[in-house]
Image 1 (tube, one colour):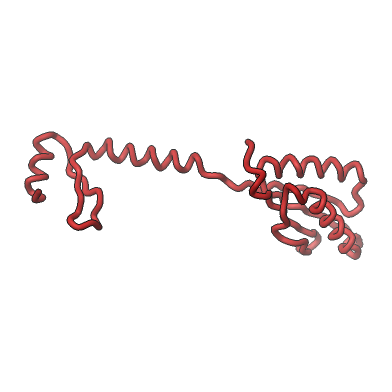
Image 2 (cartoon, rainbow, N blue to C red):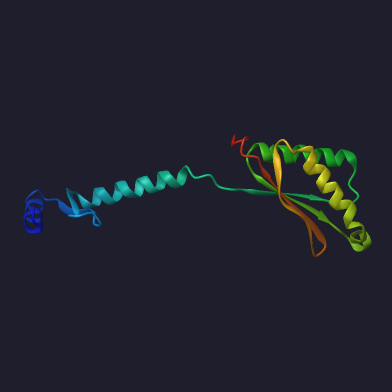
Length: 147
């Protein structure tokens, strides 16, 4: 149908002529209420954004001379975060001359990662950034999001 006829028909119905597929041959148009059409597109966009998975990075801070019990508490917290599908950034903070023994803290981080190897993978290996040692763990894809 020619464009002039389509426009005339749309105006007589009190609606708009909307080009739906401009790249096809011939271009496809629809006679619709443009305001309603825009509203429905916005609702679809909102719904798609709502169902997107957002990546959350949680942080756990350690000290080089952490007690075994405190380490277990942190490990339980780490497991909670990983089960919820969050990435976890582990920090070891150094004060004064503690940084001389950064290799022991690195070993501690690897031990923590080894203890949760069924839930997480090492995304970035421990690296020294100023006075802190940082390691990132990401959840395995098989765990999925639970909330």
